[in-house]
Amino acid sequence: MTRLTCRLVAVLALILVSVPGCGRQSPKSEESGQLEPSAAEDETPHAAEGAAGTMLRLGADTLRDLRLTTTAVESRSGRQRVDALGELHANQEAYAEVHPPLSGRVVKLLAAPGARVRAGAGLAVIQSSELGRARAAYLSSSARLLLAQQNQKRKRGLAAERIVPVRDVQEAEAETASAQADVRASRATLSALGVSEEEENDDASHFTLRALVSGVVLSRGLVLGQMADVSSAAFTIADLSTLWLTVHVFERDALRVEARAPARVTFPALPGRTFEGRVTFVGREVDASSGTIPIRIVIENKAGSTALTADELLRPGMSASAELQLGDATLTILSVPTAAVQRLGDAWVAFVPRDDGRFEMRDVGRGRDLGGEVEILSGLRTGERVVVQGAFVLKAEAEKMRGGGDPHDH
Image 1: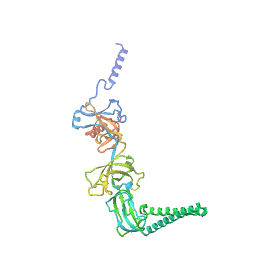
Image 2 (image 1 turned 180 degrees about the vertical axis):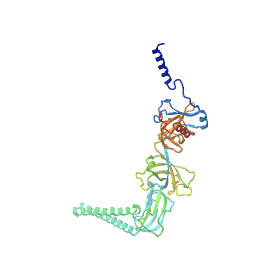
Image 3 (image 1 turned 90 degrees about the horizontal axis):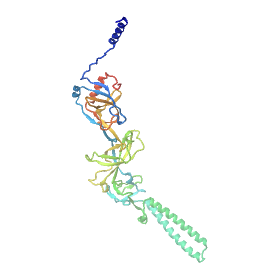
Image 4 (image 1 turned 135 degrees about the vertical axis):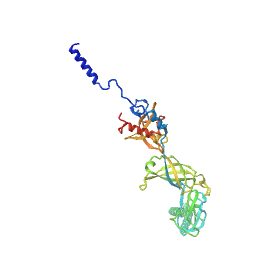
């Protein structure tokens, strides 16, 4: 062997000795958990293009001790519900306060509270000197009109025989027109006082106060002999076949209530009973003191077509609670139990079980709380199974294996 050959052999031996770990593997524990990047096992888009996450591998003993439970990601209606308190009121489109058109003494009462009346029915008889003067003016103007018409007819006959000039006929016609205007004015005065044409020739100082709508007499503010006041309601009348429930809802929820949306209504006075209603109006102004918006719900009151009885259920003034649906009825969302979504650093994660003790730690978009469940905006899809009981332990294992670092840097 030449000297050059010996030097080359020595250099090669030195290079082989200096290579670290050549031909050897690092040992690993079978029972300790490990994090490893996962392959993209599923290319199907999730709720919002969720991609495969970090794979968490647990040993058999650790997995057995966890006693994990899983559930499937569900698709459900995106509508939420909100409860609001309110009070029943009479339907204002079928409600009337009857005021006497003039002051006078009550001489007869024709309707009592609770009675059912029809529009135009008599409620009370009131005597008024003011009405007497108005009737007298009407009768006087009617008499003058009759006389003027007769005089006009006579003058026309005389003018036809050339006994009187045409000018006399014209004067008679003008007098008739003036009398007609007086009659119309006095008739309008009586009409404003609530006197019908049939009552024009009745007792000059008496008039009948009449119902403006059909319904039930809710209250009566008159007694016999009392002086009726035009500023005070003598009767209140309402059709109780439908009632209005006004509830006050915080603006963040009220803006998601749609007109015609259904509502479920309950009353403390009627435990165990539920009534169906429908939203007919959402207020256009926020109450500055409470931050709420009024919402009107119409409720059918089948017993309301009869006079108030002990059997009638719903009455104006009753307090109630309404359950309202929020949002679009056609909207669907994904949801999982709240415990399935865990906070890890600055992100929310869920654990999708795989084979051989592996769990895919998936980043998810967390939406609204749904009462025991949470909305999933991204990262999962319908039907996928996620860990529920034990998800917190898996999160702790992930943090421990990462040594407190970011588990998503892989």
